[in-house]
Image 1: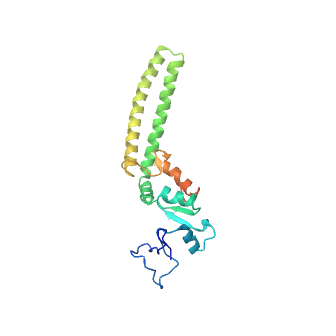
Image 2: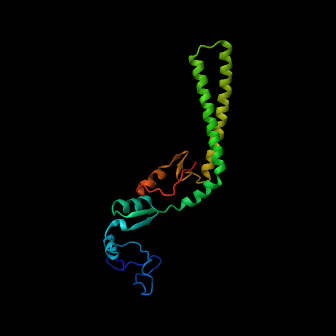
Image 3: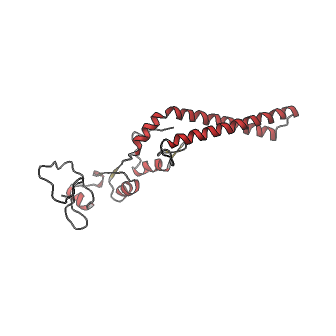
Length: 198
C-alpha cells in the first residue's frame, strides 16, 4: 500500500474514491496510484536506482522535467494532440507539396528581382537594354507579389487546419517550434520514431 505524504494514510488507487485497502484478490502487479511519497514508493517497490522507474506524464515541465532532473526517473511524455496532428499531416500531404512549390517559385522570382536590381545599379547598360530591364523588373515584382500573397494565404489556411491560432504543434512555419525543440531535451535526447514533417 502506498502511503500519502500528508498524514501517512493509505493512498487510493486511481479510479477509486475511497482510501480503503485494496481487495486481496486484485492483481498487485498492475496498479496505478496518484500522489504519495517518492521515498516510500522506492522502498515499497525495492527500487535500487531511480532509473528503474518510468514516469509517464503529459506536462513537459511539471511532470517530465521535474521527474527526470530532480528524481532521476526515466520519463515518457504523452502528447495526445499528436495523434490528430499526424492524421492531418497525412491528409494534407498534397497541400504541403503545393506550399513547397509556391515557396520555391517565390524564392526564384525574388532572386531574379534582386539580380535585375543589382544589374540596373552596377552594370553599364545602354538605354534600350536598361528600359527592357526596368520593364522586366516591374513584371517580376508584380509576379513576386502575387506569389507571396498566394503562399501566405495557402500557408495560413494550412496552419488553421491544425489550430486556429497556433497552427502545428511541432512547427512554426517551416521551422521546428519551441515545443518541438523542448521535447527531446525533456526526454533526454530520446526521439525514437520521430520523422521530419514538411
